Image 1 (cartoon, rainbow, N blue to C red):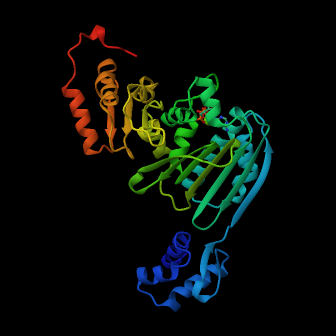
Image 2 (tube, rainbow, N blue to C red):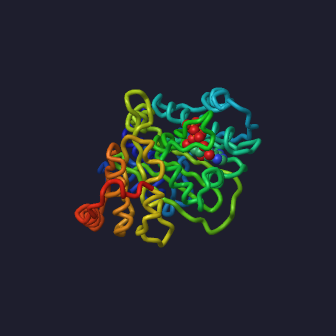
Image 3 (cartoon, rainbow, N blue to C red):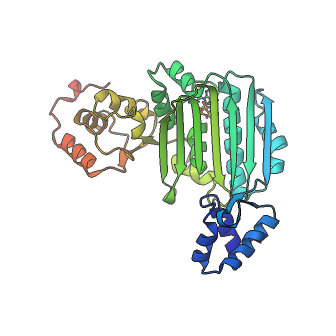
Length: 349
Ligand SMILES: Nc1ncnc2c1ncn2[C@@H]1O[C@H](COP(=O)(O)OP(=O)(O)OP(=O)(O)O)[C@@H](O)[C@H]1O
Ligand SMILES: [Mg+2]
């Protein structure tokens, strides 16, 4: 049983490698020797390492599990790989282990079924505070695959489509749920392919931060998936499924990060940007439009989403979240200024 103080040190050392001693002294009102006692214990147990001399001492968590291997990609082998090569090495609470199994097998299955590559490279490490997975293939690349299959103009558009969920390029065998659910189970989920890097970070109160980044350097072939979760995560796979599925286990609700419809430096103003957001939303019975990271929207964009879509799809509730006051005002404006056209003249596209 790890003491609270040692647990605190081990869970915070990564964020404050040189100041963790002072931080713990303040937090628990302890003297320096008292904190060093716990630090030395953790070092003795092989959980922590120290670098540098006393004044510039920095602490790092030590890996207690490290697995690296390449595998050939054969159909339907993801569960066997988990069972034989990964599961026996991980010591984690049941709920975290279930999340890891779900994420690892889904992402390895993706490499098997979608990458068009023959091999994948796996790297897994666990320390006291967290466990992380890399699954890397050198195949076609996820955004290029989606872009080609759906005739989209840019990799960003492929990413926006992917983030809505229910997107698959292999409909006879797949449902397009793997990435949507897996990315919500981990503390950090990253997909990198080509020049695009997409990251979801779990924040306080189960909120999420989504980042899309155009990487300037290094075109890389294939797809890299990174997943990381805290070893004391207190949620389960079931909670994540329940949030977006209905009683019949159908994927019901989508959460659309509006910011992804915008290229860097662009505004969200046009009807065509709105149409990219609205594409395929009729497949869901509830839609959360998340404006996080967006301060303003233009009139055509707002009109398309908040007046025309509800008129043509009255059965699908659109719930807008994280709206700025300026966005609220624009939505109110387009709703109040609706032209009175007969329904037959409303453009349904
Ligand atoms: N490693 C990869 N290489 C290339 N394309 C990929 C890769 N992983 C995923 N994709 C693309 O992303 C799409 C969405 O993946 P996701 O796992 O969400 O759904 P799916 O695999 O199609 O269906 P499900 O996971 O429900 O079986 C895939 O259909 C495929 O086009
Ligand atoms: Mg999948």
